[in-house]
Image (tube, rainbow, N blue to C red):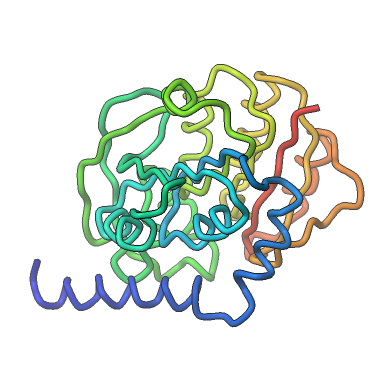
Length: 250
């Protein structure tokens, strides 16, 4: 790796660590939020684990966590942070609709936006907050499926999916309903989130809620129908903050 590329790679890593680990009280707030979903003895899939801040939360709550992370930089970090924990398992792979391999496009300065979805890259830069993002490198990575993970580890109590545009493809690799899922949405690419709802409804009957940004607070007092959740996504401005939506099997 050339010196400039190495500098920006390390800069991007430091930036992610600061964002996700540097805010006082964040881990405690995250534990309070996720405690309503998982606890001691639970099983969690963290698909797109990145720097592992959620992994740490799930392990602290007493859950077993299977982290799925294809970026070599971050899979190495996850091994160092959590590799010795008895309830942590790392799968160095992307997730998708079928097993095999794919190309991961890497943004060195903003590695949280590295993606396997080329169309998503073109769409997301329409939002002002993403307009300057660049993907300067690529690497071939293996691909697993949610079905394969379930066959190997069991049915998770929570499946968190944050894979920068590949959420729909990940769900297409699932043939059975899961009890609870968390998926990222970005208003500039809301069509993908809406497609995820359609995928989930093909598997089972779900109700929905959502949280904005990293607030870790559910926005709705009651869980929504698929049509209501779709309407919430459609109402968002293109430059509105991203967040997560939650699907609970009815």
